[in-house]
Image 1: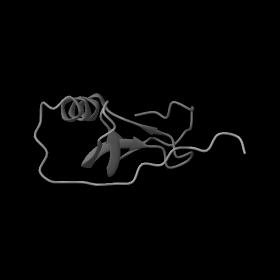
Image 2 (image 1 turned 60 degrees about the vertical axis):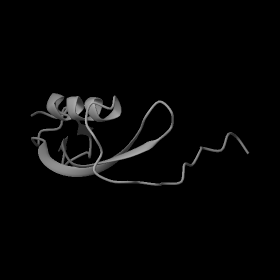
Image 3 (image 1 turned 180 degrees about the vertical axis):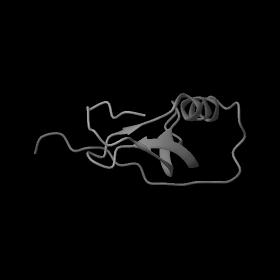
Length: 79
């Protein structure tokens, strides 16, 4: 896959762990998620298959296999 930023180096597929949040604010960790990453600029893109997995998990179509608790942080607005 080509980098959306126009880099000459092809993107590499890697497995990552990401935190997503459901509409109610509940954090969900998804492991072994396939992402494309540009080794030159660091741009990430999510393949459609991975996006569907995330969508199914966030919509409750897939049961979670464990508990996860993480503190939520909000960005400070202009100090």
